[in-house]
Image 1 (cartoon, one colour):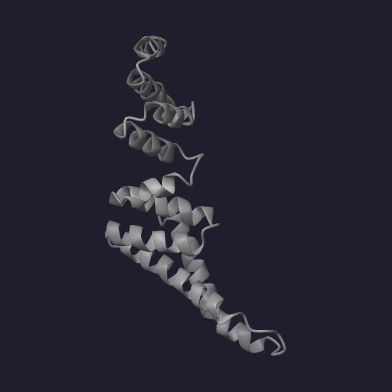
Image 2 (image 1 turned 45 degrees about the horizontal axis):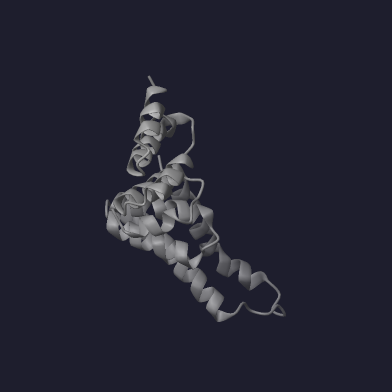
Length: 168
């Protein structure tokens, strides 16, 4: 089964292949798009396709680099941002943390931000990041443990133990 973003990229590529014939049929009195926009669009699709190929061939680092390039070229595209974050995370790229800061509602991004804060011994920020994780689902199982860990780091050991007792 192919990745949904990959299917979307293939559809966009197919549309681009049909674009020249559609342009030939269009009236000539329309102003042409600025050449910079066309070049940026080409770079965007090139990065997307290269990222797909790298991902399909198991080249995680290259996939992360290309996906990061695509997300940078189209910063408002949340799908590209999520995909770039996932590939950066899988590749162990430092870009994953930078992207995580742009994804406030993502559980993995909150966990990564919290873990980074713990590494810097900033337990208050870690606690806030862990508290932002969803209470339900799989993350709901580890959320209280992570919050307790951060609470202990701030010296609130009693509060951390009480939090863990409630899980029993």
